[in-house]
Structures are given as structure tokens and as C-alpha cells.
Amino acid sequence: MKSAQAAQAVDGAVSVPSSQSVVEALVGWYVANARQLPWRQTGDPYAIWISETMLQQTRVETVIPYYNAFLKRFPTVFDLATATVEEVLRAWQGLGYYSRARNLQRAAIQVVAQYAGKIPDQAVALRSLPGIGAYTCGAIRSIAFGQVEAAVDGNVARVMARILGIRESLNQTGVGRRIAQTMMQWQSQAEAGTVTQALMELGATVCVPRGPECSCCPLDFICVARKEQAVTEIPALKKRPQPQPIDVFALWLVEENRIWLQKRPDTGLLAGQWQFPALEIAAVSEKPDGYDGGISTIRHSQPIESRNSKPVTAAVRLQTAFGHILWPENPQDGVPVVRERLAAVSPRNSFVEVLHVQHLFTHLRWRVQVVRPLSAHICTDLALRAGWVSVPLDSCAELGLATVYRRILARLYTSR
Ligand code: SF4
Image (cartoon, rainbow, N blue to C red):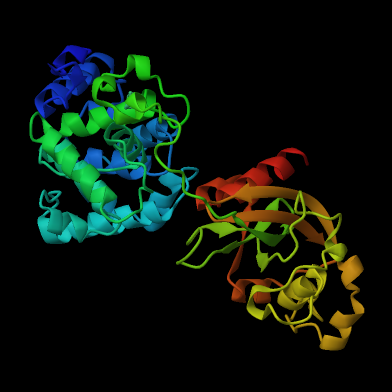
């Protein structure tokens, strides 16, 4: 329902239309054009919470199968609260940003313990749950409970900035409040959740970052950016810092169809996920493909913990970190290799490259070099003491292997 006629002409100029006419145009367009998404077929606050969490930083098409499978596996907040973290991470595997899954489960436990399994509808209670910030709180309250509360994600911020002609950075003081106030004014004139979803849908399908389809837009009659021919300038783009390159040296340790893996720490990047035993070293040099030809030639990297120390080769770092496990004096009794003997294992000849891949996070660029030690005799006792586990190659997927390592495994395992 296009409502250019809703704008009132006064002395030849176009005045600001009433918010009632804006909301009518927006909601009418949404009803006629909204995509049929699974979380739009439910009023269950739990399901809406799951969908809003999954949709953070993740595309709708990616989320749909995960959402369906997750709700099948954990149909209620009680099922989620009583699951193990490993089960939840497994259901989340491949979706990225795994802290979301951990927070969901912690929040589910809190909802069961404090609210008898009923998702709270009050902002203070919702915001006290792990992983629920202003946006998710606003989305749940408006969509699931019909309450007037702004939910400003990237799509909504872009649409509103263009409509209101906000040329300042979206981070600038007062901009967020102005957008939220306008949104809430609109929410108060219709079903709040429908207005929220209509703005999200408009941003996702019409008012896209590049090349918005203004001729199909139900709000073109009030859009300042369009009127001022400033659509490409609004919103002002934030300059994102380049992701920091990190050299990751990962050990490919496969024996008789079993592979050695290591669990990452419970906090930080990829918390609690499994990986190949690995070293992560902040790179000093920025090479085009992050790779200069071989394990023994990566001399320009420095360890994170000693940035001011002399550069050391990655092979020496790997020997220092893992040599006692890979080259024990006696693999049977677990006596670690003596320093002199380790020194005799030439760094240059101690590892061979198997594969190298790149993996991008928002703020980091991993340059992963997978290496295999030559002539190693892994000492099981020392490996277990270091927190490594040996698992059958074909059951890695059940463990919750980090995505980058799943990619590597798929390349190496199928090519064997
Ligand atoms: S008129 Fe164009 S720029 Fe303005 S809200 Fe609609 S799609 Fe976005």
C-alpha cells in the first residue's frame, strides 16, 4: 500500500506526514510483502528469543535450518536448560559466534530457576539474562509481548537514518535515542511487533546498504535521504579497522585413523570448542597471502607474549611448546625429551607443511598453517596431561570442532 497521498500538500510544499499515515503505509506493505519465515509463524517468546539470537550477525538463509533443528532438539526452555553445553554447542556448530549459544543456555537455566520457565516480559528481568542486550530485549518485548520498545539492529538503523536524514555517524550521542523514539512513536500506533518486523524487513529487502529500491519503498514519501538525493551518503560509514593477522600453527597428528585434538579455553575466541593442538602468534609482517613458503621460513612473527623479544622461527616455537610430547626420550615411560636432545632435532627439519588456509573473524584474520611433525613419537601420558584427546577421525563432528578446523579436516581427511 503506497501512501504518497498521505503526505499533505501545503502551499506546494510537502509537509511531514502524520505518523499514522506512515505506520499504515509501512504495515500495509509488510502484510503484503513479508517473507514467510519460520519465526514469524509463532508467538512463542522462547522461539522468538532463539531466532533473534541466531539472527545476530547472521544471514536469514543461514539461520533457517539451524532454527528449525534447534527447536526440534530443544523445543522448550526446560529442554535447553537441562542440556549439556556440549549438546548446545553441537546444535550451534557452524553458526559462529558461539558465545551466543553458551549465553542462551545460561539464560535458559536462569529463566527456569527464577521465572519457573516463563520468559519474562519486563525489560529489567530480560536484560538480566546472559546475552540479552538492548536490541534483543526490544525485539522480544515488541514481537513476543506486543510492548512498545525499540529494537534497533543494523537494518533498522539504516532505514531510520535514511528516512530521518541523519547524516551523523550512528554512534554519535543522541542519534540512537532519536531513532528509538521515532520507532516507538510508530509502534504505539499499530501492533508494536508488526512495526518492528516491518522495519527489519524493509531494511533487509528494500532499503539495503547498496542500491536500495526506493521506487518500491512504502516510505519513500517521507524519506529525507531520497528527497535530498543522499541515499548513498546515509548512513555515514564507519571505518572498520583491518582484522589483525594472526599466524596459527596447527598440528596434524593422525595415528591409525585417530586424531589428537585439544579443547580451547572456556572464555575468549571460540570458547570451549575443539581444535588441533595449535599455537597462535600475532603476525608482525603483512604478506598478501599471509604465507611465505614454509614452516622454517616464517621468521618475522613474534609470539604474543613477548612482542619485544627477538624474532624466533615458528618451528622453534612449536618445538618449545610441544617438543616434550612429540619427541619424548622414551615414548613408553613418558620421560620428556632432554633439552640437548630436543636441540638436536633441527627446527628446519622437524615439521612439514600439510596445508594452509585463511579464516576471517570480525577482528582477526587467521593464517592457519597445518603442519605435521617428522618422526614424532607422541607420548600419550604427556599428551593427555596437556589436555589433548585422541578421537576417531570420523567422530570429530560430534565433539564440536571449531569451523575453521572442520574445513581443514574436510580437506585433509577426504584427500587421504
Ligand atoms: S526511500 Fe529509499 S532510502 Fe528511503 S527508506 Fe525507502 S528504500 Fe530507503
